[in-house]
Length: 514
Image (cartoon, rainbow, N blue to C red; front, side):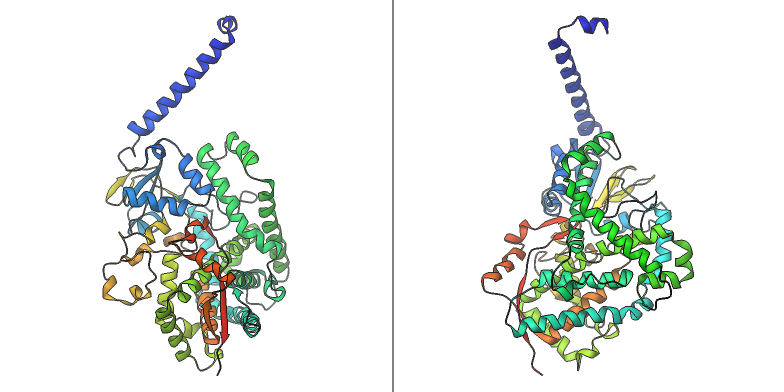
């Protein structure tokens, strides 16, 4: 120290600068030339820095950025120094499925969802594998087909409200923003299903402050995750950057969502004898569910269900409506199937709508083209390594399937960017398609527990819509919204923060005369 005090300030600064440069150079050499992933293709900058991937995530373009990378570099791409992205269809099973002869992959600590831990506990989404298995068993019956049949009356009540509102707007010849109205419907449905209290969106014909905050929670989580990528998990630098870069209002979005959900969940738990077949009713009635979940875990999972089961379903419904309205041949086939299958709207039920082949094909195709959960879900390769795209991947590597890139790749589908429901019906033109490259609900132990519920909501709403109305894209001034959904045009500007920030979609309705 005595020597340093005698040196000029410029010499000390110069020495420090040289030390920093040498350290950075050593890091670049190690990541580029000595790293276990050095032989995997990808951009030079991505191989030495987390910044490109973090920037894509924070700006909502991860889905399209990764698609461009895979188009250039192939099915497995090094997107960060220690991370690989994959679009190989079989990678879904390797990364997210039950791995034979080896441990299943844990979620990466980089990943953060819309629901943060509370009192050291987490909901099913962020729980480690063992705790996740316990919670999933406890929630199995509330999401079973048997429970779904009992919940049909709850769902139908909100579909009836939607159809009544659409009938009024059709009579007034007003274009309808389906992006908004689907959101109102799914929020009311999930509020009623989670804690017996709809949001009231359909009644007031507008969003609430709470429902508006939920989509912003996803954006806040993406920003947080981007910072963790660059600065590490739980580091002082991460905490500093979160305070510096993430607006204070983002914390408000999360607080609004969490505290409102917590209040309503506690109110529902305090009324255990209420005969309302919502999720909490089934948790309380089922012995394993009641004993296996703490009160905190029930709260966290209801917070999760509201965030995961609203905007995602509304996004798919809006995307499906755009694709159906912009493809007259598919629209005609679907209308004929729905109106030819039911004598009255009262016949549209869970048991019947799930058996409509063309409806299911249009849903699967919309899910492929416009997967509601379009962001990557990172996992960590366990001891023993893994195989992706025919190549060995060492333990400790962060890996993920890029869902939007996988479902839009010519490596997996013929005419990958085109809406072709027939590919799901055995059409020989698509015999070479790898249909399992599209997994909008993921798969394996952590596959979406609400998959059956989401399918039923979508089928119910779609069938009632086309049974009651003729629909078409609005061609007036508001019809400009249709261009915002064209993925060959303005649709490329749509942002994804785990789910889509969807634009308006104005539709003209004409009630069917019978």
